[in-house]
Length: 125
Image (cartoon, rainbow, N blue to C red; front, side, top):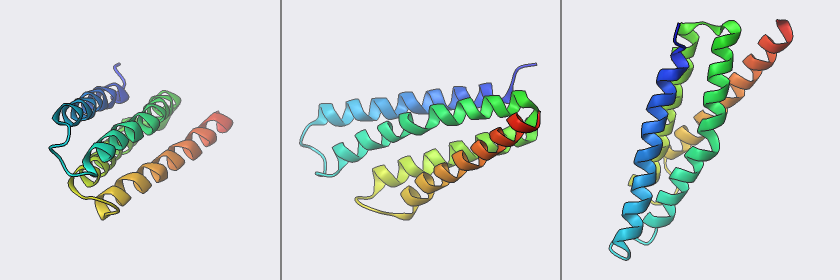
């Protein structure tokens, strides 16, 4: 049986490529964008790279440890939505905004929930 987490790894790989291409596009355009845009674009991609690999590893391990397909879909789809919110908030608005806040803090909460679940399943099994 193919793990559900594999599908989410594929989605996140495509999103990673999209974000990396955004960085390239912004760099090639040079000074033709608002002052905040290049830094925000780079930080969006960097934040993705900082958080998503751990989330995907936890998602896979939880699934293998018996968390179930429904739980994996809930966690995986939450990760996708939260990272999309963060990327949208970072690219559409300068400074702090709700999509960025919800995406970033939601990702931290999701990582915490998955970490606690992994700890529980690891110690209980």
